[in-house]
Amino acid sequence: GTAYSVEHKDNDDVIVKLTSSGRWSASTDASWLSVIPGSGNGNAEIRIAVDDNTKTASRKGIVTVKSEDNSQFLEQITITQDAAPKKK
Image (cartoon, rainbow, N blue to C red; front, side):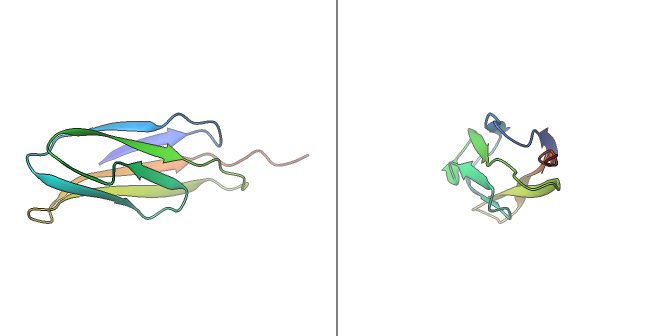
């Protein structure tokens, strides 16, 4: 899979180029990540939008892209987000 580290806020979308010969769908286990588009057909660019992290702990989310034709995993993207700075 691919791994990205992002700041705690004001992130640009993470853009991942996907190579696929058929239909695919993308999903995430993290409420603070949004995957656009959630599905497609063939090669594509997917954007992962990252919400700001207001907590003082870092967090990790996984985006999984799998083939709709045979349920094989095409790509697994791990995004680790920095913690917000502790308030003084």
